[in-house]
Length: 194
Image 1 (tube, helix red, strand yellow):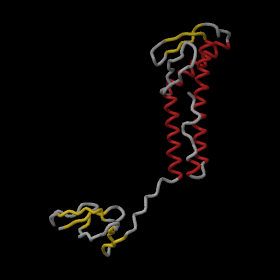
Image 2 (cartoon, rainbow, N blue to C red):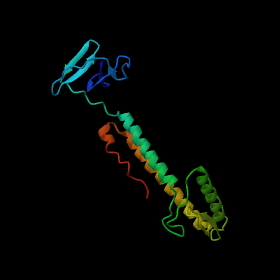
Image 3 (cartoon, rainbow, N blue to C red):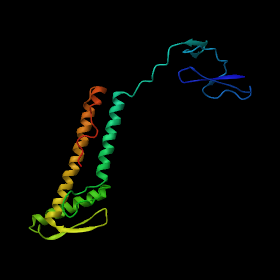
Image 4 (cartoon, rainbow, N blue to C red):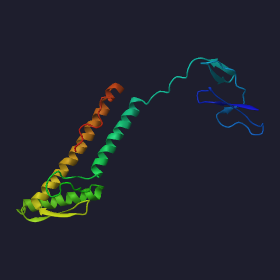
């Protein structure tokens, strides 16, 4: 017996197969003899039989504005998370070129604890005392004054705040886009710190 493959739009794909009557018909196939179609014509299967049309199947609709916004917002968050978990790289000083790890909340808690301790030492008048210790992702231990250590951690906090600010600005622009044309103007690469 002859079976014909029918696509999701009810149109014959042009494929037919000869199968034994005992085999049955796989999903997406119909136990029907295909019609003859001319150039530029399509055969659609309807309950009452074949219809021949020259109308192409309309393109599937693209993603909605809400779906595009969700996708872009997610991309901004992924970038934010990647920057933060990649760690902070001090641009100057004895830690320049090295990475202070921010992989997870434990790392962040350790840095906040150090910031509080170094701040307390500076407030107590011990800012010039060497005692602020850093262990970088490169497994290098560096010791400096409490004042310098506090400065590094305050710079890290400012950098982290700028990462969040860039993410929030992009997400706000995405949320505020009234249509796809406005959404296309949102630059997912803009505003991130180095």
